[in-house]
Amino acid sequence: MKRAWLVVGVVAVSACRPNPGVPDYSGFRQFAGDGGASESRPGPFPYVMGARRLAFGVFYEGGASDRLPIDNYFIFSNSYATEPSDDRVEGLVSDELDFNGTGFWGGGLFWERPTSLAGWSTLHVSLRSSDPGLATIAVRVLYFNASNAEVTVQVKANDYGWVNDGKWHSLSIPLTDFRGADLTRLRSPFTIGNDVSGGTARLGESLLVDDVYVD
Image 1 (cartoon, rainbow, N blue to C red):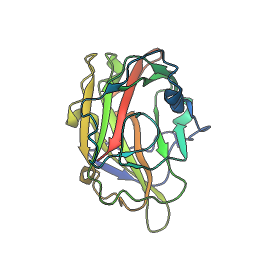
Image 2 (cartoon, helix red, strand yellow; image 1 turned 45 degrees about the vertical axis):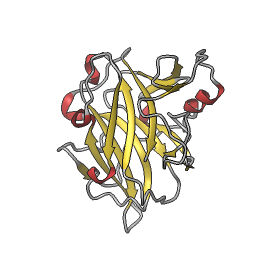
Image 3 (tube, rainbow, N blue to C red; image 1 turned 120 degrees about the vertical axis):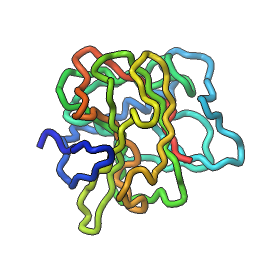
Image 4 (cartoon, helix red, strand yellow; image 1 turned 135 degrees about the horizontal axis):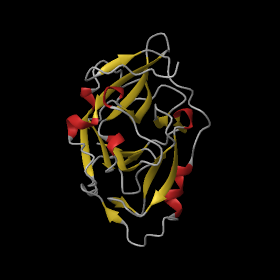
């Protein structure tokens, strides 16, 4: 099934989703600093020692009180390629998603077993693009239901300040806005993709992703 996402503001759909393809660990290159930048940036909300912040090991390089590494970074149906970019809001590099014009696009962070984010309240992500195919973006979490089937819940990035105007936009999404998601049995704490109600990225378009964490 090529498209598993139904879009009505916040939506839950069951296990069917695009072929995730081969796990992609290119996001881990940020730790080698191979983007060429020499000055680490603190981000729009710099980490303060003693504060609670959870990092996943991808899309974020700054300080954190807790770290919960993910098992895989999947790119659905090889819909984009990634490379580090010096254009960032946090750390040394961001991740540039270069789209292959596949129609549907998406990808994100996954755990093999149910994982809990109980006690955490807000998902943060920073995005930048000026391309017309990125006018709307969906942010999703996936969880395992009582039958251990994957269920997807999404919100629209546009509802949290996303605009494809070529500027960085730092989104703060309350986890409770992923209505119905069991945050104690997560399969994915963060996936991103096209909101099919508003078009999709075209060949040659790109999106910068950075500063993904939970507090």
